[in-house]
Length: 454
Image (cartoon, rainbow, N blue to C red; front, top):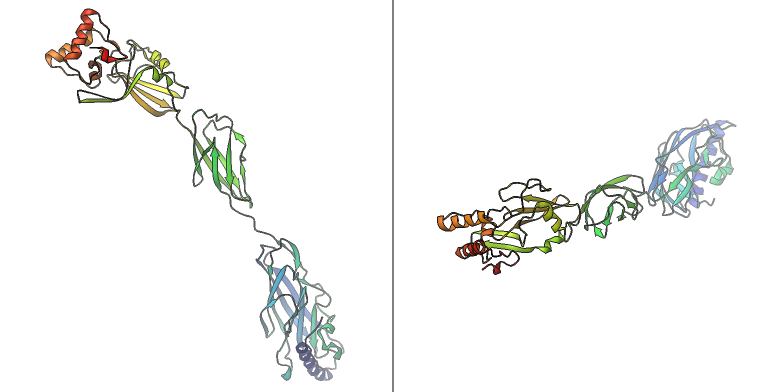
């Protein structure tokens, strides 16, 4: 190991003083002692991260009269993949924070080659003589990992020449650091290297960033995903496209078919560091575009007003007299069992789906359509001439008309629809004449085109 003039001069001065004192000592042997213990704060580090090695020095002593005047310790490290920084205090000698990079540093306290750091402790004033070093202290080496990802060995104290002394019993040949090695050291077992794993930290990212089902992008709110798929989508075996955080995995996997008949499922994302995050997926089936295609067999008017007083929306006319609920449902031709109906008679009675109550669909009957149990649309029935809502235009309705016309009786709400026989938007004498003509002359009341009722 090449040494600088500064180092050589200092140690030559030290040895001159030691030689003077050694003549007084009379000792032929030189029992030196030192105890070293080493520890690392961690063994895994990310590129750019640091690992700290602490070496405790204790029982540093010599029985030579002059004592130990300089102490050197050498630590091996991988200078290609680490940069070392050292701080030390041995006895009363303090060396500040120093950086070891890649070439020799001409400094008394820190010398190194490409893979070793030799830290030397001594007083800094050779003109007055090196003062004795006793007791112990601490050496802290901080290794900063470069970008390489691998395992490396650092922090070895290499025997036998890793520990060196200069004291008053040393021969003149100990004038250079390369010649002071191999002295008696206790204990003989030196702290060994540790294997450090430099690796990129495993990611903890575990998010679902996109979820698509049946071509529809879901809405992600926190860890809940809501998606509405088209009506008729087969949920018994369906695959979602799931986009997740980099380096993460998801179960069920993106593109894997699962059974979503229950309309809910859990997708669990596992991060690279094996932490997990479950997501709840809620599926809604959209209402069909035309859940009751049979509605086209009737005449549907979005809005009707009678006598400027009663207005009804979604009015179904052209309904055959005497139609019961089961027949009406068959005519509506619902697209599936997911489409259901509630029929309510003009007086508010909910009608039996099987027609067992003997009621017929008539003026004022409301039909509520539900898709997947969710209200879809409501309709109201109009049978021209059926004022009382029993599903027929007959003498009882004529009597109601006469009572209205002669005795100033009133029609209640939907009865106005049945009373407007000619469809001109008014229940008046012209409708009564149509009714009388129908009754006396057995004429026809047209349901498909009320303008013909005149």
